[in-house]
Length: 142
Image 1 (cartoon, rainbow, N blue to C red):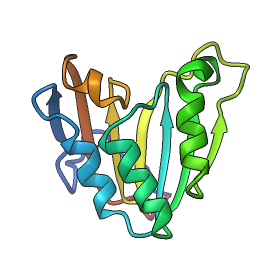
Image 2 (cartoon, one colour):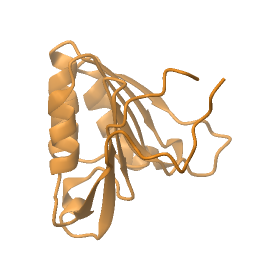
Image 3 (cartoon, rainbow, N blue to C red):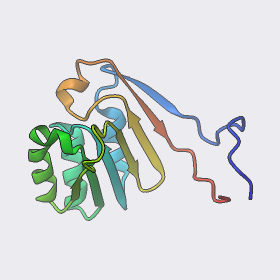
Image 4 (cartoon, rainbow, N blue to C red):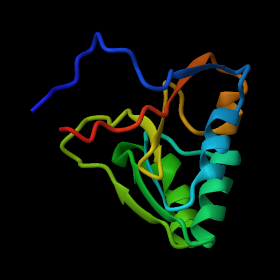
């Protein structure tokens, strides 16, 4: 079977954003487009547009699945409770890993938003972080 060649051009260019300039837009814009599902894995959730968007989508029937870092329970427990309260499926990461430091969401199995920063609006508006949005269609030949 054919494999992915890293030298092949991408069908859809990556979109790069720098924070704090872009603010929450790369995340909330992607969340707003979701019609079926949003899968999230994040070190620290936070208040702001991401949490609000996830809660709204869950209340409107979009499947929301979230993994939060188990070592960040003090920070994340209130967000876990809030998301579960609107029907999202939320789990703690595996204890076997010292820190699950990922910050990624996948929208409708078609768009990935990958970030170096956590999902708190407060920090997004004051820290330098980067966000990559990948809309390249999956390779069906694998």
